[in-house]
Figure 1 (spheres, rainbow, N blue to C red):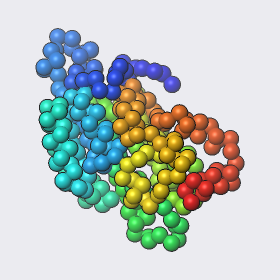
Figure 2: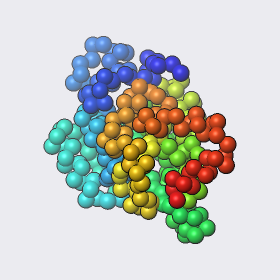
Figure 3: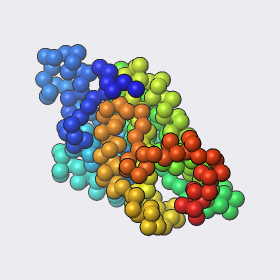
Figure 4: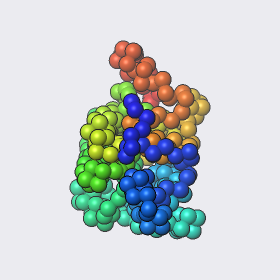
Length: 289
């Protein structure tokens, strides 16, 4: 995979480096001053906690104005105030349940034009598929798959029309293997990875990159919702949410197709290609059981 194209990949020395100058615009019109070049605007879903909140903080440190979306207003308003005080950026708060079609449409209407989309909103829970309630599992598919697809398609088309843009889709290390005990969740993340890879290939010639983030164990509020309890091995391989966000934004800025934070997690794609499915199922069952 090529490391850079003129309007495909911007290599930042640090994920916290200010990003007020749009590279494509400055190259096409060298006489434009930094003050006259538009500031980037980023949409972050699931911004009230965890990886989404940390990504919003990094983008704000880079000078991006933000659209912060989640279901919890208090947390979003607190983050908006924090980012304004620390970085002087403007943030819009959109409270919306993206598990509904109406919630996604409401977000699109409220957000307007953006240069970066971070599809971070998602959830999962542990337990046998047939013992978990149907509505909860279908809601997971609606949020993890349908909402992400809707937003990626909508903003991907707009970005392609402008010839530039970044989409960061949060998948999971679970995307690489089936997961008894979290069957629906793992399947949704496999979709996110596959979809993001293909969309990246479709949009790359148009100056738009799509990056799939595949984190392993991360200590966020996800575990409480999912009903998971970290064991010794999970804790030893866990990567802090701040570090995951830093790696994610850096990969997105470089236009990478996908990124897996954590040295212990990186061999997993190769292992899953070589290991028989029955072994993958046994290992996943042991980890999630």
